[in-house]
Length: 220
Image 1: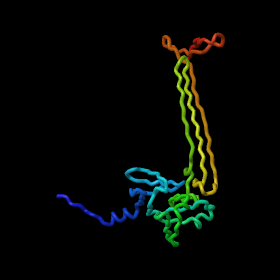
Image 2: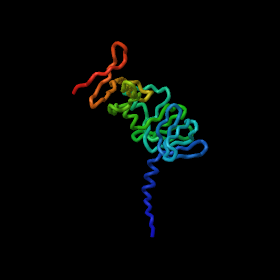
Image 3: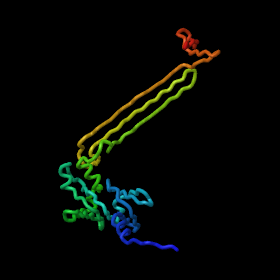
Image 4: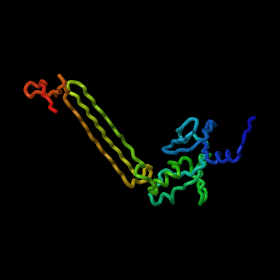
């Protein structure tokens, strides 16, 4: 005997926390809006992963989470950004973007004037510097090793770190700080081979005259 339990509220809660995007050809995806930047929309779908398409190919877009809507050629500073940039759930339809703000009236912006849509958490972290020391770093870490086994054995290990962090990381905000970190190091180990004869250990040492290895006895 099998029974199925249905919770109507669960489906309704899932629908309220899911973003939807509809393309010009009628295809629709459910998931989460990542960002709108440089005329491209990045949307995450559980089936397709991250999908990036031009904004002009999007017919409708609805978000359940708040986003900051930044207009083109909008001049803002870290002090004025919170007042000048509307933050709220997004509804794109008929070439117009509506921002539903919680404590203010809805604001409509022409789609052609949208420079970027940034999620609320990232927006406030960048504006109010609510980030830890590990946030925002970019660069490279390189490690290398060289092992030589011949008449003489040698080991060389190298490492370098080149990192840079610019806060805020959002391009349209003026930079507040810039930190660079450059480190490099090399460690090497070389030794001549040991020769064991009649239970005694000899170390091969290059001769200063003919550059041929001679033998010197190691005494314990």
